[in-house]
Length: 628
Ligand SMILES: Cc1cc2nc3c(=O)[nH]c(=O)nc-3n(C[C@H](O)[C@H](O)[C@H](O)COP(=O)(O)O)c2cc1C
Image (cartoon, rainbow, N blue to C red; front, side, top):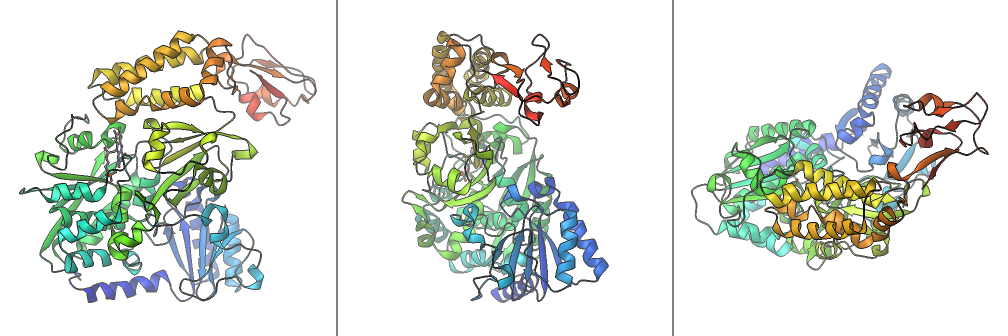
């Protein structure tokens, strides 16, 4: 069947509704890459086999990321008429018990993280048996979230186009093609205030308008799914959990700018995302939602995948274009910007995964609706992968304008294991480290840049008192140095030069002169590099020098690492009062530096010790001390 009319779409919608909200039982397991890494596949198998053994009829679905990665494997159990329960950290054993309870007619409260009332139902509180289970939107992790980009992730079956359609999917494409002109679509995007979510925050409507205004035989639209920042996995998760909204957004974009061909550029390290997108493209083609004469509108659009080799610089738009053309993944100077001269010299729009996934929601619910979320000039939501030394980790989608405090303390639950948060890193290697003194800063594009970081494309890494900020700067510099394509001298040589200085400092061989030199070279690399990689590479250095200069000075003046991290500047000893002589450290020490008889005090040979801190991390009594 080809979808040619709105009633064809309505027919598919009712098919989707019957699997999304079946009578009886539906169990969804969060099986994005994050869930799989936590053991979701084993949980899925246990649920499947036990239900089979007990003859329990149910619909079992592998869904995308449910968001609260900290609590994975997550299992969502829906009983029609009774609502949904979200179970956390499910093991195969617990999964089997769960099936046994469900087979006996119970909705077990044990291990339930939250209750989610049935959609469109008046029932807002769980039954008495579940009285102790909080509502999902009462959990601090979820209470301030507003899901637009992630509206379907963790809810639909990512290989069921019908379920996507049941959640209003393809209504927006129908609206755009049947009721609107390309200029009308661009006007909605302009009015919504949407800014590109790939990092720089350029207004999407303005970019589309430029491209739309150019007469050309061919134009292209590209989805940027390169996502190379350490700590960021939002785009991967969207592609894994809801590939359809990205494809629909891209098709609408193609219509708006006058492109008939699109490319989805995804790094090859994202095999599940590639699989999901491949399936989604094939399904959309089969139903006529890609191809010729979509919705009988006369508009033709095709899309395909390009697998990137995983170079960070290929996320930069001109390098990405070169990579698709089969050339080296190297940037070129702009202008001309891709919107006027891009892929094969033709006008090309490049948008981030999240930007495109937002488009259908704007067309469906209106520009005013979108513009009413967030703040003036920073409308809508932003999605972060909240990771690092924070109690609650996972994907967080919040209205722009929330403060860093809201993100880290309210949603994130503060430092891991009760430790004090020291810094928040956003924007990956192009971003910076902000201190908790800026906790009240509302998260907007301008605020982040003025504070010395950038919004970036989704990574938010939390650092605590045990993190050495000089080492963090060195880590990111090491990354950009390795990922620099080498085409321009400031980036190629400058990142290496800065890295060498940082290595000297963390080894206890730095001088105060090195700090001056570091700042000087950082400014030079920032201003003289060809592309955004080099222009932003010094940000981690400059922001840590700005906010954590005392740590740099302690390294160079006192030869001390206040966080107790830099190997050359610490010593490990065993505290006689606490050591029980269990021998664990002796057995595990990789260089044989620890000796001692069973049940007697152990000692570390300072000559042999490499300061790897394994003993510190494993000692059950906390008897190993770091001398800073
Ligand atoms: C070194 C570097 C890496 C980048 N990586 C990405 C990326 O992985 N994903 C992305 O969408 N944008 C990335 N960008 C930004 C893109 O060049 C481009 O601005 C963006 O894809 C435009 O989409 P948007 O308007 O929707 O934000 C990167 C930029 C630089 C300089």
